[in-house]
Amino acid sequence: MKKARYVFIAGLLAMTLPVQTVEAELLRNTRFDSPPIRRHQKDTVPDGWLVFSSAGRANRVTMTRSVSHEGRQSVRMQAQKQPMAFQGICQAVRVQREREYEFVVHVYIDESEPLEGAVHGQMVIEWLDRDEAEISRDLGPEWDHELEPGEWHCFRFTVQAPEDAVAAVFSIIQHDGRTGTGSGTFYVDAVSVQRSR
Image (cartoon, rainbow, N blue to C red):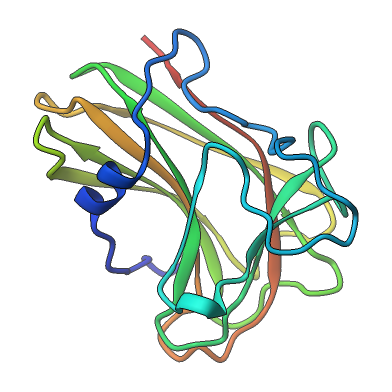
């Protein structure tokens, strides 16, 4: 899979998102069941998450009831079909320096709109210091046209927080690739972030 590239301002995200401290599960609304939506309702943002897009109003991230892994809802991400475009969801949490954190995401590729071309998804963690400046970034697993559609796939990776980290932004991102000529839709659900030690 190709290495994802995008421009992302961690400081802006840190100021936008409420940073929280939770004992076991660090994320809120991990099954995207809040707010509850009607089957054909559009443009709904999951509570506790920030939705972002490089293409502004062309954003194609929304909640849906058409498929889910846990609960009744999931988040749908559809290719924007613009060169180098990216979009996704993210959430910021407090972290403890030099502790390990496991990031888990379940992904479903739409059978009627499978990923094609350079369109792909990826998990990303951005580590922030006490001034909300980015210390470093860990790029996690990617999924693209090679992932089997019509079934749920679990992606996970574990990373140690940097020495000066006090917070982290956990993101799930959809990239259109260099030319923006690809297409496809995927869903995410049952997301988790926990300290592994």
